Length: 310
Image (tube, rainbow, N blue to C red; front, top):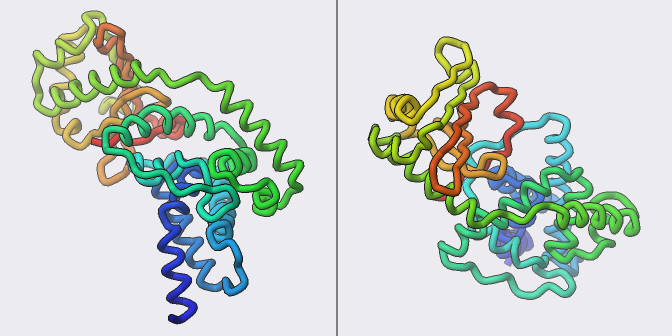
């Protein structure tokens, strides 16, 4: 077998693991796929004949590519749109060890679809939101060491820092992660149930179903970019808000459930281009008490978004 064929086969064996690493580092599956593809291009031009730990070597290459992407993102912040929660990569990420690295066990088996959805909706969200607050170096040190068991000496090589400095970065990141609030599993489930029903009723133009999901005192606010007149708008009361939602049935057909800054909401992103977001406030009584329609580009860029499965 030619060396190039052997390397291609080895890369494919590690691909899902590499996607998991890149996903944890970048928080976007489309970006993760780009990082893995870039890594493959770099691998094809390298001499792997003397590499003893192929898994660790490939992980290092993907980590360096991801680090460059994180740093570029800091200089030119962009909000990736159109990502789905990737169950296979998320399960790999949850395994907590690098394939082929010292002390790493076998990759965790994929759970059933329901388990994967729960992981994506709660634990994955909570961690990704916190990771997004870290610097690129902190994020890489924490993810590679704490989540994928890469030794600090190897992480330091990726960062171009000493092992001690890398250990401090991971420690600082760890304190931030541990200090983050625990995800509200029950709250997320309640929000998703109500948002799913609201979107279905809006798609069908079902006025009575919409009214039943809205608090009688619900308020809808829309920024100027969301209104044809170019002026902010406010609607009060279940009947008025439901009428507006039913009239937007065509938009609802192309809308999807999403996590909006850690809560379940709705995004309108035809052909993957983000146009507007509905941030929902859901009460414990399973009624929507407020809807914020966001279409202003500056506001949209500041949101943390991820499409939910389904």
